[in-house]
Length: 122
Image (cartoon, rainbow, N blue to C red; front, side):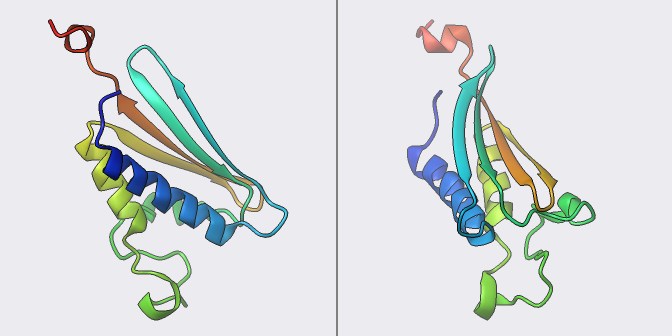
């Protein structure tokens, strides 16, 4: 995979930071990497509080917060996941999220591999 290591670190840092914030002591956060013929897949899975089904379509929107009581002073700017989506898109990829509240939340990055000719310098 060809990618900007600083931006990939920022993407994963945002996702792991969110997972840590929403996973109680005794919960788990799992990072995995895999691949298909065309993509590298990176996942962040946690056993935290989860995301309500009605909130899931909005989580990548700028300034959107699931917890309406939170503000910049009490819980972030509402930009973390929007930044994740922007950076993944800039790499030619996509990011998806699934959640079963109280059970698990999974963020999956699909990042394209260089075409075969690009990998071999042809």
